[in-house]
Length: 158
Image (cartoon, rainbow, N blue to C red; front, side, top):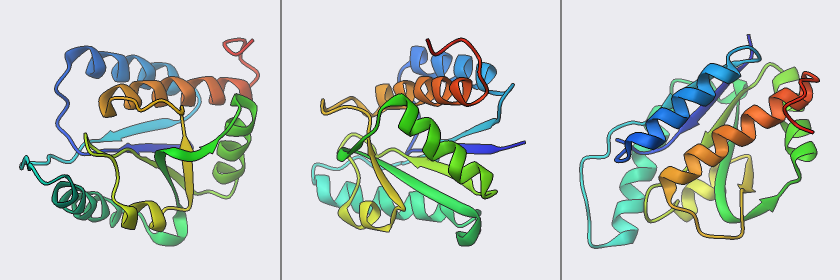
């Protein structure tokens, strides 16, 4: 079974986000395994750059469990590349066909550090809008379901 992972600093604050993520995990499991990893970020800082650096360390520690040659890391940023659904599905299909684990990294409330953006294999924008980081997780989960259903010929994407 193909594997996808969403990685972001946790924990979630909004119950509806957790419920929505669970819903999309259930839908996606007919196509692939979707893991959602939310390593707990314990600190809160008035200094946004310090927070981003500490979240970067937390995320890279979580990435260590995936061998570098077996992963493809997509970082999400509003200044990343905008893809149409069909292009997103092609990216997913291409990387999964290479037996790579697709890992989607979402930053916390301050976004991602420049260091983390530069270490990703691809920078993706879900929207030119700035989205709440938890809402981004939910939008990403729906986009993954839509892309996977398109790849498999399921009628969800019309």
